[in-house]
Image 1 (cartoon, rainbow, N blue to C red):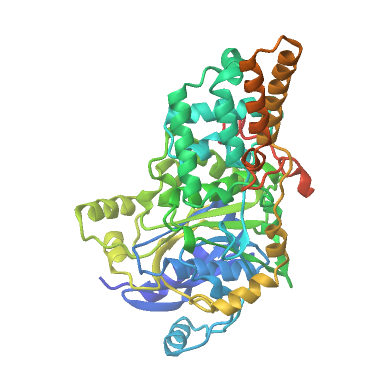
Image 2: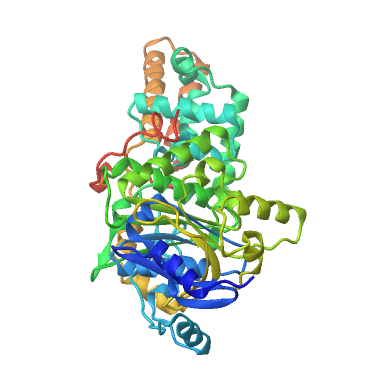
Length: 517
């Protein structure tokens, strides 16, 4: 069925025109033709209403992330992005024109204009950028339980341990602190100490949790927990008026989705706790892109989903926008999906019964259109095209429009290794987070407590008549305390006390708030 291009353009222009600053996404497509006048814009003031970027593999989701990030940076809005494959570092360098980019520019009546943007590189290992770490306390029992793949009972044990540490002013900085607490509180004097106020920790449950902690360490992931802990204030940098695009490169930990997806959520929780209420802003303070979002929700407990929903619902009042990027809208729980007012849907393919079901459910999330048959247009979109509806400045959903997207202006791929190395070495934040701290924490406190009790027993033995067996026992205890391995235990991973030593404000305990119990 043919449509009137003038009527289409007029309707789209009215729906997407904004009085303030906006992100230019592209132009509308009608009956296979690009209508350049039908511009599709996303108001900056609506970016903290969150969004979804979805579509099958290879349909251009990553490039859509890139073009939005570029324009946010240019508008002075800092951006945080997960770089799954390590191919977003090219944002730092101006792209090069070619025939396809020129053709797209002509179709949109906007010539391609190459540009680069300020980028900060991060990684969880510290090998691919400045090290991002968090203390165990900052993760809290629920998030840590997901990383360790614990059941509800085992997560409850973590909650009891966190509560005990809070009450006794013990910092849980790294996994050595957690292992020490788990061991101390599940046997002997420690078990007796917590029995009435915190409950008993069975040896079997403690053993299971301990094995899972050791498994994480054996995979080389223990260094994610420690000090110097990442300061979320570093996400708000600007250079020459442009917002810095912070990229967390996870190319070397791609096989640990529970770790990096949960780490991202811990950053969001930290932002929620630390930022003041912002009210209505002309543009967001920060936009947070959550790529591979389905990994966050896989096998998530009810309590975990409730905490995610709460953070997403409330963090927009702090001036932070969150965009989830995944293959299908059905990857996102309805309670979260309902809070994502801006939608960019790339092509969906229906090769299997599950694909058909996902397509049917996705179509139902869009309002009816007088210009499109939604189920047909979604499957017929080409690479670099998307079905879009956003919130206008009054918070009302715009017309659904098939859009020919504008191309990114920076390099669409990774920087050369030598350029990445130069960028890292010139970064003050890279130098800042190379420094590790090892102040007193739960490990040292409990070791000192155990040693004190042993010394008290030795003193009792010293004043009592000594038998040959008692003298031999005392000698063995002294040898054990002085052994090099005893003095070295727990020094492999750095520790600190809630960021105080770094000059940051103490962080709110997680055991009694979000991601706690």
